[in-house]
Length: 315
Image 1 (cartoon, rainbow, N blue to C red):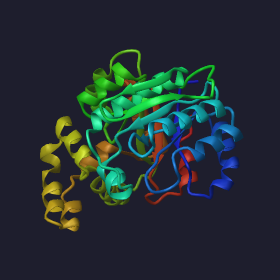
Image 2 (image 1 turned 180 degrees about the horizontal axis):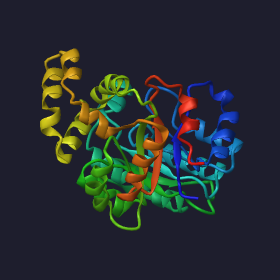
Image 3 (image 1 turned 135 degrees about the vertical axis):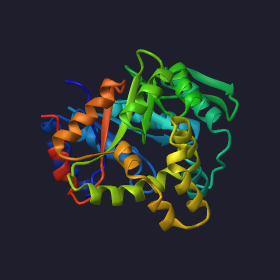
Image 4 (image 1 turned 120 degrees about the vertical axis):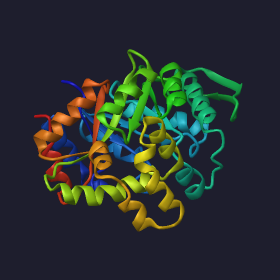
């Protein structure tokens, strides 16, 4: 079965997720991918999924490279790999200055080098090497992981623009991408390179009421695409003219005008919506253009999340 993932956790207490994980596996979802911002941490939902539903591959998409020390990051990756042997991946990335610096009090310095160094360290640590090395952004003295792994997990890097995308292909096992259209994948995927996994978080709302989706979608677009790393990403993708009005009003402090300035077609490009069949067809376009692992992130704009998960299932 081709990979077909869903974003977890769902909108329910983690203690109630066993039945939900069993159901999504029955529905044909192959993967469960988490995130880490201001909700559940990125690993606990995956450890539960690994224990409760052995049919699912699990992975964080992503853990910030800054908010765990190198040794702790290696322990986290090894723990997930032991909980889900042969059926996990480990995604890390820069995250954003909001999450790293404003929320966690960690300086958001040299994001490219920090992520690259963490990938290099993890590769050695998960292979069982003793590490005594000065990396560009941190130094590790005499660390050796006590856990032995029969199969170290693939490491994936969250990437947007060419430098990070190429680093993901060169240093890691692939890339994690998001907030882009199916056609954007044609520009992004070649930067990663051939024979690499490309995981795409795809925002989906199976609702045929375009006005409802567009109105709510503009708030989601504004929340993300005003973060500097995403703004630069969409300038590179060619949406500078479409988003210039939003960026100007947002900088001026007029959130209402910023949201209103987002063209409908930008929402249509970046959020998959329509009937379940129309949504599945657009998701397939991501795959056709180079995504190897589509991961749905349901946006509950006028729809119930679990109803949408069931409607979007591959089988």
